[in-house]
Image (tube, rainbow, N blue to C red; front, side):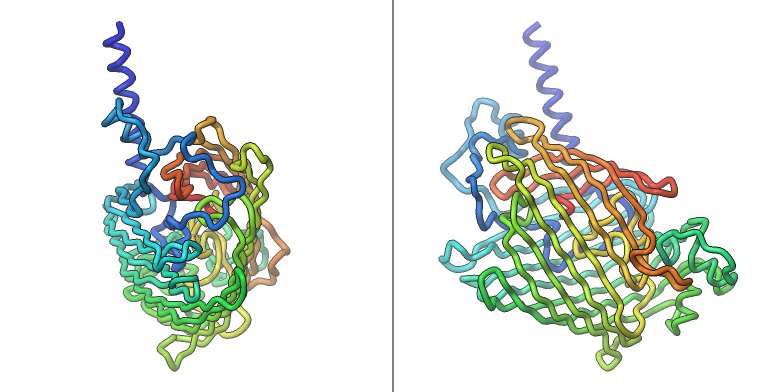
Length: 442
């Protein structure tokens, strides 16, 4: 009987290991290009920890591996863990088919100042059964003393983007045939295939305690765009391109970036307290190769409240993200919308760009709480409200669309508070699905 029970326990451990490895790279919806700041994959350690995490009482993925492969070996509390993480990038959903690939993240502190933030590098390569190929390299480098911060990425991809028209899903009457196609009131949905390239670099300078200012360039280029419109004006993207003077099969959105950033949150992966705020201005210019001129303002505000002194992981997190066109015209696939924030995590309950407009805002709240005393498993419940404009008279903040859900968190690296996020979310128009990622949505 003891031998049989031991075999069952070992089997359960292996099944849990296989499950966690399999979901390491799973994502919902389109394949989106990563954030230039690496928030999604950051291994950056906490800047402040009050109270200090008792890591010896926490249990993470490395502890699970040790117990499986070396069940008699105790935890090594005298040495720092490796700054390199490699996980399979495996996914499966109707948009992308089945996906296989690999993702790697590395971290190193530059110089000898202990207050210097960790410099991060990340890369990923994947391919899917529907012909999607994706490769990126990201970096987020802090010089000694955090005097300078360099953020950037290079992306090369063959992508597919689900499209549900322009606007916030408002019921509209008296539209012209073209306006009706652009609004897609029946939410028919279209798949847009393209070749995508992005090169982005920003340089930030520390100007005061917790405050940075930065500037840079971003080149976003799409070629071989195909929305399966064989008759012209039959899909939202073709109507938008005709109305705004964009070519149907290609465009470039090349611009200057200007940002100001303020950070007091204690950890970028899983904050317990503090504030993160970033405001940016983007100026696309034809003289550097952009198809059209445009000017956009973006804002990103996050606030974290720890609700317990004995269990600081119990957190109420608030988030507001917005993007606003203030002049010119931007390409259809670059419009702000669902999951078009820096980390492509906003608006859970809907696929990327399900709602979109030239003016867009998303507000979210999430309650996070530990489930097990060793913090290996935690839970979340969340809700969001999205709003945007359209070209038929709907103004931003006039109509709101909700999303809501809950999920589990698996502690992947307790030293950096890195976790695996498994969420199930619901939205309107029969939208629902799993959203699995590395680290918190915000």
